[in-house]
Image (cartoon, rainbow, N blue to C red; front, side, top):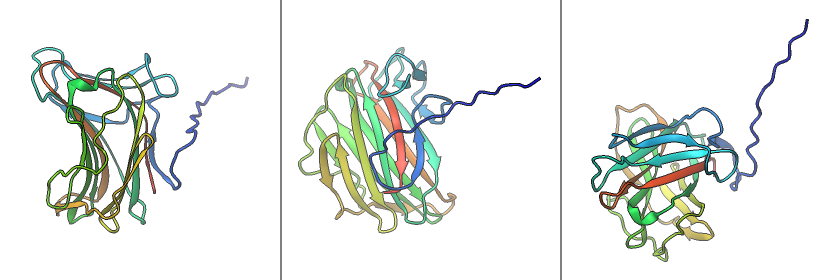
Length: 223
């Protein structure tokens, strides 16, 4: 007697960057991200009530009891670069209320066996401002990026960097594109950490009210 087997196949759809896919998560199956932060009764779960595409997204929410300013949720994934050492981090995100968020931090870390090379962009809704981590460890503003983004709408944030030259390449916020190719990436010593790529996002609260984000279609590609 024969037996039938069913296999689920996920179609990635269009990835808006040319190059090999280093990592992709549409949050339709097992949760592959790691969560840290303030903890308590924070939320870190696949949510079927809202998505950019597909049936669900990843819901992140800071704790709702014993709340305080700067409560935090952080999530990350570890993988590896290709020999070109080029990477695009593409994140689709949604928040019902960005005014409850103090900062959203978008990070790409490359540990090369000797140093930590860090490309980071930070969004501060209250200002509003988009800033980047420079080679000295400061966060100067990105020229022309002094704008906010819409509550209760999906947004696409694409950060590109070259760890071959240790320079940023560009930042794209929805249809707004910024050339960052003259800017150096921050480098600090990390000789004891094995070589890997870490993609990370975290956000903090303005005051005692919980803040939340939904993530979907999270990709790392070779630029």
